[in-house]
Image (cartoon, rainbow, N blue to C red; front, side, top):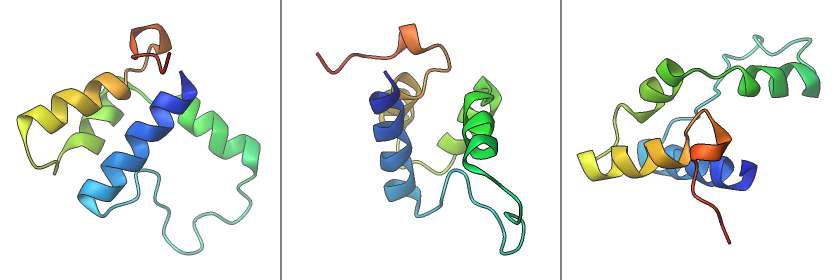
Length: 79
């Protein structure tokens, strides 16, 4: 299920040209792998909706909303 999430994030970044978890230069000082992973785990539905703004169509938004469902059990499976 995390691979589906990652695929959704990658697609959103490719379509919008913006990093979903962008940090300004210098804002990442002291960030560890654990801190970044915790931030990703704490993503809310509102965060996902903000990531989806700027997608080219309603169909793209619906598709990516499905891939980026906060509850992993609601995401499609790769199997």
